[in-house]
Structure formats: C-alpha cells, structure tokens
Image (cartoon, rainbow, N blue to C red):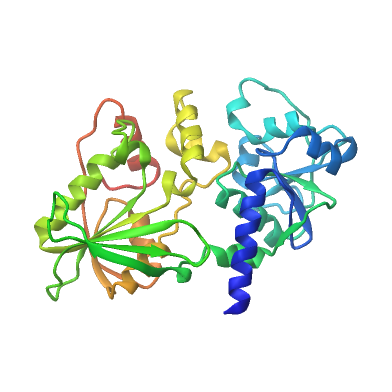
Length: 352
C-alpha cells in the first residue's frame, strides 16, 4: 500500500509539472508538454532545436505520419525526428489541429524508432490526465520530477475510489434522494451517485451520466446531455428504485478545454468523432470501470442500464457488473444537435 501511495503522489506531481510547463522524467525519458512549453525553457533544455516530438497515434494518423518501424500498431505513439529545426512554433503546429489550416504543408517529417512503447504510452496518458494536447517534446534531461509508466497506469485505476461522504439530498425528481460522493486517494476528481427510492429486491435502473458543463449547467443545444440528465432522473424516480452515476469525465474523457477545442473543429465541418481524432485522442476516452467500482461500493452487482450506448454495456460488464437489461433512453433532436445525434448512431453504434 505504501508503494502504491508513493506512485500516486509521483503521478500527481508529474501531472502538475506538465501543466506548469516543467519537464518530467518517465522511466528515464524526459518530456515537456508542447502546449505549456515556452521558447526559453525549450531552448535551454534542447539547444539547437534538437528535440524530437512524441505524438499520439491518432494525431500522427491525421498528419499522415505513421510508425515505420512498429508497422501495424496504429494506436502506438509516433516519434518525429527533430532534424535540427523543430522549435516551439513547429512543435505547436504538429500538436494543435486548430493550426492545420493556418499553417499547412509543413515538413517533410521523419519518424524514428519509438523506444519503449509502454513509456511512450505513459507519456501520452500523462498529457491526457493533465488535460493537455497529447504531444510532447522529448529531451535529454533536466527534469526534477519523475514518475514511472506503471504509476501513471495505476493512477487511473478505479480501485482507488472510496466513498468519501453521503447525505440526504431532496431533488425535483425525488425528495427522498441520497447523494454519495466518491474520491480517489490521489485524483482530485469527485464522482457522485444519486440514489432514488429504496432497494426492492430487483436490479436498480442505473444511468451513467458523464459530466457536461456546457449541457448540464449552461443549457447548450449542441448536445443532448442536459435533457438526458433530467429525463434520466425522472425515469429512475418513476421506476421506484435506481441510481444515477455522475461521472467526472468531461468531453468523453478528454477534459473541458479539449472538448471546446473539438467544438471549434466541429465549426470547421468535422463531426465529433473526427474532431477527437484530429486532436489526438480516441473516439471515447472514458473508463466505465469507474462506474462499476461505484456500483460495487454501493452493493450493486446486477443492474438495468438506461442507455443507447453499447460501449457502456460492454464496459460495465467487462468490469464485472451484470447488465440484465438495456433500457433505451432517447430524446428528440433539435436543429443544433441533430448532426451530433446522427454521428452517435452512424459512427459509434448508438441505438437511438
């Protein structure tokens, strides 16, 4: 347990360092996030612009850069050789799809052997955990903060979640509701569950709702998140017994800032899937094992799941919670989210 706690603290410090624009050593590989780097620090750590750039496999595919050594492993990060000319501006152009149209025809670029795939994947995961674009300068040294790829993987483990607090919370859908807060030992994200009604011997009706500031709070019409949230609470209350899990996985796990970047790409004509890929992320970065852990802590091993998303069913069942029934959950589109809902149906298999 002591070793796990130490690794969690190391990962938390590394996340903070990346956000602040400081170099981090991951199993001996020193990285500096492109997004938070500045020219002075980069010049000091990589004289003569001798810093390779590590990109996620998805971002590299957008730029038509592939692993020439690790052929056939499209999900692996890609290492782009510096050739003595990758400065902050060029590194930013590689990282940020907002600049794809403003700075076209850069290159040519040359990819080189990746090194340890686990370390490279850990570096990309660390950038995502920090809420940054998945692109990093690779340096020869200079890091005061270090972490292992294993500690980064363990940091995301749902097994770290515990119940932190619970209280009665009357809501419009159910005046007798109870709220339960969950927190990991290192991660500051606090997931919550709303328990509506009383256990009746049957599997509860459960809704997994990922945080959406723009939809849940600000009333965005670009998605259906806000209406889905309130409709789910009403459906659970009407069923007599159920649970809504509110997961702090904004933007399908890429964070608020990156979600807004995806919105900007959608304004250029990309759908939600292609926008995520151009940013360098997977189509869906959420971990539904978190929801399964929450359900287990609440004593629920069998559920009825309110969803149109087969990936949620598969993710919950893979984590050991049985889904005895999938209950459809659809709302009518509006002129602003119709294309978004079509994309969910046509490209991510939602059964609308």
